[in-house]
Image 1 (tube, rainbow over the protein chains, first blue to last red):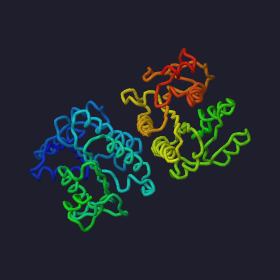
Image 2: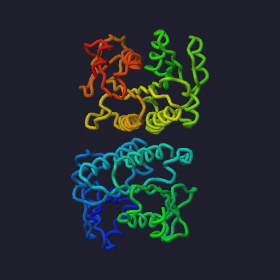
Image 3: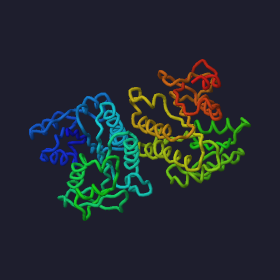
Image 4: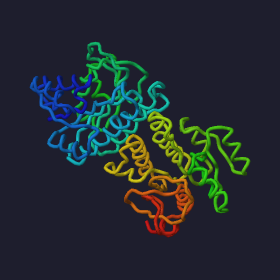
Length: 214
Length: 214
């Protein structure tokens, strides 16, 4: 599959790109905003496309058309305010979902946040962020696309273990970004994850097995 | 009809409450956050209910149950940041829509913003606000409720003229808040406005006629 990664330059995005590149099964296409980011991926032999989630749906249609799947792992990050949370995490996702529908790219994997679907469990320190993710996820669930929404717990930079816990509802926990990237890569062609949303933290189950049993 | 007004203490909200109170047709119930706001309405003989759009859906269910209609004219306002835009204009609306569904309050009138449904026409100075309104409106349109979404242009404090232009798409324009309040009041029991969304600016058509021809 040709897989567009929105947020390819982010901490999870980079790992998704590398995993797909080394998998042999998929061709990652790093979607980035800046030419210098594109150049860095190109040096590693990775295809790129320049597009901005703050641009128009039409721009995003041009970026994704001809691909087979989209991974949305973009985020405005902690250093910008809620203005960007609204424009990227919420509306950027909404526009990319529209672009996917318009261009017939049926497969869409979204990186969300643990319990984004249950307000009572939102992280009190991050309520606006959770609100944005909540509505972005709802847009995707209603899109008719073959979506998978991965809702990881607290993100760690330590190496992955390859073992996770995945279920509709999990208690708070954490997970290495590497394992989140592996779950995304493993989910892409796994029909069992289509039209599913699940929480994800570190656990005892090998990733392939975990995503087949959700 | 017993009509709950969320944002009753706002500039449009106060006028909606007064119009309904004097109409004889409807009983307004001012939904406010603070006891002192409730006291001020009570002094004018207006029913009140204390509830916070940043509270739980369950709180909001208690506030709206037994009423016949809801008007959402709450907004975090220009003085707070996009954190509150996410939590009130977007998620506050989303929670109130859920509460309406849960309690069987079918009629829901939303105050939105001109062209909130068309990204290319969003006010460049207010993009995050427009993003929040866009997704709140989408939630309502998909809710199954008997909604009306009123999308006024630039809001003025001058007296209303009683004449408006209402249509699915209008060029930028402005309108006195008093006329917006009158359109809301006139729409409540007007079946023709059910499941409709329209832009609204000052114009040449009497309000009753304008809302029957959208």
